[in-house]
Length: 127
Image 1 (cartoon, helix red, strand yellow):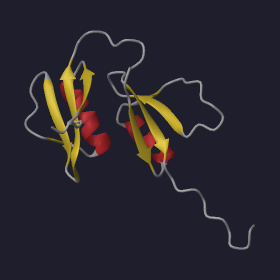
Image 2 (cartoon, one colour; image 1 turned 60 degrees about the horizontal axis):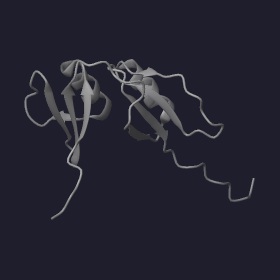
Image 3 (cartoon, helix red, strand yellow; image 1 turned 135 degrees about the vertical axis):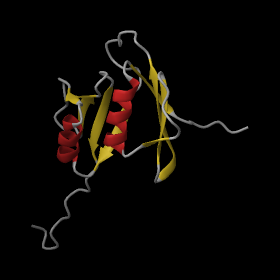
């Protein structure tokens, strides 16, 4: 028997709003027509990536016990784009060498945007 992750499930209060946010944020598409309390999204370029959205109207606890790390070649541009889609930047105690920014989706679920840009190339002259 093989065990593997089939999907990450995010609890949300408003499934249509979450579908709108996560499809725009990650380029995902619905696997099938979303239902009132459930939607399953997939990445059309990476068929093994699935994010599901489950309606849960209970208040969110203080912090997620699980969160997504999203890698970006242009972190600042992606953070600005996600904020324009409805994400909000959270106050966070960042270490001096932090390579991440903590955001929350419209339902308050935290996720990180990691700076995955390649390090600048050194000049061949050593300067």
